[in-house]
Amino acid sequence: MIDQELIKKKAPTAPGVYLFKTSKGEVLYVGKAKNLRKRLQSYLRPDQPYKTRVLLAKAEKLETIVTRSEKEALVLEANLIKKHRPRYNVILRDDKAYPLLRLSLKDEFPRLSVVRRRRKDKALYFGPYPSAGAVRQTLKFLSRFFPLRRCSNAEFRRRERPCLYHQIGRCSAPCVGLITPEEYKKIVDGAVAFLKGKAKELLKSLYQEMEEAAENLEFEKAAALRDRIFAIERTLEAQAVNLPREEDLDVFALASQGDKVSGAVLFVRSGALLGKKTFNLSRVSNENDELYSSLVQQFYDEGKYIPHEILLPCEPSDRELLEEWLSEIAEHKVVIKVPKRGAKKELLDMARQNAKEALAARLAGERPYEELAEKLAIILRFKKIPLRVEGVDISNIQGQLPVGVVVSFWEGQEDKSRYRRYHIKSIEGPDDYAMIYETVLRHLNRRLSENDLPDLILIDGGKGQLQAALAAAEEMGLLKEIDFCALAKERDKEGEKIYLPNRKNPLKLARHTEVLRFLQRVRDEAHRFALSSHQKRRKKATFESLLDQIPGVGPKRKKRLLKHFGSIEKIKSANIEEITSLPGFNRRVAWEIKKILGTGEKI
Image (cartoon, rainbow, N blue to C red; front, side, top):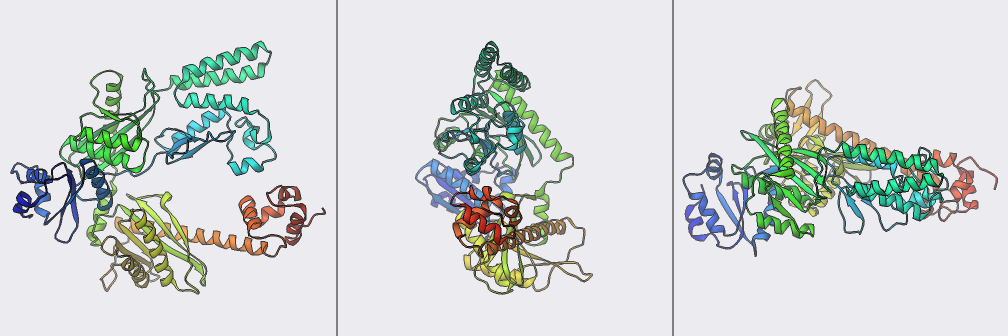
């Protein structure tokens, strides 16, 4: 138990953050306060909820960090929760950035692309969309009736003939001059109007353009415009919600049963509902106002788009502070509201219903990863519950072109955006232990700089490989921050063996246990990624070694050939004109390339 006198007399009266810890230093809970002493004294009252009494019984240490303002305490609290993932804090089990559509206005012929982050680059951004599928559907629709270019800037500059998208009517082919900048701008303006929700103005403009085309006897153009108008009208009719004003809103609601809490957020952009996203909360608070405060704080902490208005079923604690913080990072005013009537109240009810359905699905048969993670922590005696698990493996042939890889799993699911590959630089010859050491060292250095350490690192190998990984973590000073284990596939009948730090003999689990199956899944995915990464490196090395034999092909030309063609076979099948068209090439160099590769052509 924490010394009560320490709280009563020595706790600071300034704003800041407090951390309840075990005797071993594990962070159990992180909180913020305008007045630390006053907030901590509230824990001394006898009428505390059961969960708070359990927390206080386990807490042996108290640490306070004084800040200059309550807003600084809010930001620090979010960073500490993200770092330590304390057992008794609300944890939002969703760290994904949702996809956005980006329109590059600085280009003469802008294109739409899918991105995950909004940057200050004067481009237009639309969304976020609740899933990659939703954004693909939007792009598919737009390409049918607003045929913007699809190719990258590099492809756009070197293209000599229209692409397949033009042939099927999904691209206006500005790359080869089949449309003027003025005509292309009309298509861009139409797409922007649709994405901004200005459908009425867009339809009015399209109707006028269709009538003008018909009057000028341009019947094919008029028919295309008519089809575009009908498609937009059908899309608008299918919208589940349309607000009277073009507003951007995020609408949150939660549903709970026992300690299980699921939630839903609806994305409304320009007055139209784009879609929903459901999520789970773990280690929840007992108070709804604190629950929604933590939810909002964590949801927008990952750089997501923040709309002008956020709707909640109840007013969160520190509403004004949250609004100030959100407005600062969004660079526009953000307000949090609790609607009581009208269309916004209907949206809130819809979010509540989606949250209830998400909770029902969770309780009906889904086995939350949190249960498996707790089993992992108990059986393997980890320091923390492993929500972020990373697997490490290496691949080489007799020490040649070695590659180390790291795969990442978040709450039991592959998170390929965080996969990493490392070309081994310091090792000569076949030395698996040294390669594991370099891979883990470089990866931990990277994760530390990003303030994004994993909970568990699984090594593909045995005791030697594990010791190499532990040595790298010790050098980085991270042995106390991260759990490690190794999984070795034995050829005898004994099956898989799990090697753990400070344990002489390996642990053997029953073949079909859930814990072992998950570790095998991580190990196998790391092995697959390592093999594919090594194959790519071998292919590139073969490609470059052949090109090194060609007179006149230096590093820059070699890089352009690799980027454009990707393989020797494709260069062999290319003609002289296609190679000559690349920047920095001429017919003499193209002829030398074809001659060396065994398919010489006359100039």
